[in-house]
Image (tube, rainbow, N blue to C red; front, side, top):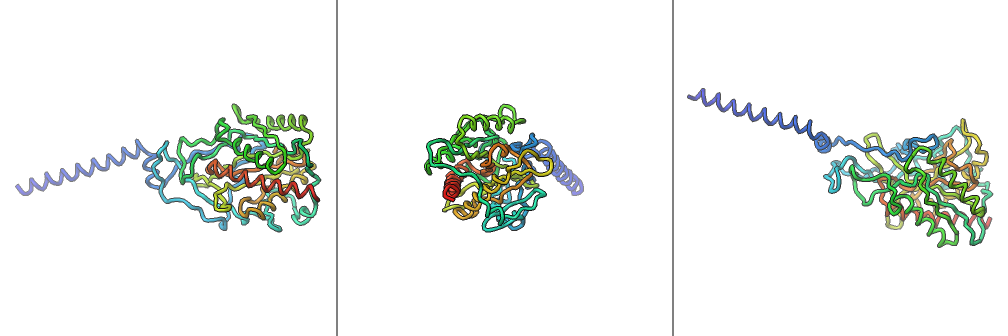
Length: 350
């Protein structure tokens, strides 16, 4: 009798263990996302905001691998999402001057060209650009990638329902451009805000369509001296975690800004006046660093045009990433307006 009870008890234990293992295997097969999230292995959706065109910026251009950048702030586990399925982490970080390989008097440049640049010499040479005291437009704001958008709220994860692009102008980069325009006009600099969609319904060819828009406004308003192509960046690390680039300015979170300055080098031709744009970018970044330290990332200096060959006052500006909130981006636009107005007024008096 004792031996029979032992066999029965052993059979029950083996059956229970088999059921447990079978359930675990099935769960792994049927719900891999859940298992991966619980184990800390995360899948991430990728943003294509800067892909598909030879003139388009790629995310690898902006990823800061410097060990001296501010330590990321993120949780070790991925929480359950209340709206959609959580698919990746958002890391809040600040890209510092350590990402630059050229530095001089609060000017920081990440030189990705084969050109040798002397920042001291360039700073001594004033841009030829001068704005005037007039009611005519002086600044044109455009968006090559008009549908780029932001997070609606601050979180340390993103979901499969968080958009990176939308045609809703109250949510995309157009809303940020509107704040920039209003800020400049408060400073007495009349501006035009072009809201034409260049990346929708087709993304490829965005820069060609933006070029046509810029030329149209320059012809209509010959008083325009400065053309700002306002973008939203995308920074994703090797683990597919997205970075929200944040600077704390006056106790508020602002999306970090980055100036992108192209040049004529290598296969890039037809851009002989690129130094005029570069000198303007240097002074604007220096102004931002003086007025609002850490707001500006190092200037990305690259061998591309990005339609900057159209004027000698062209600026491409990245405002945060898709992991930043729209609120943070709008605040940065307010600060940018102050810095740009200060820079342009300084050039006017020199």
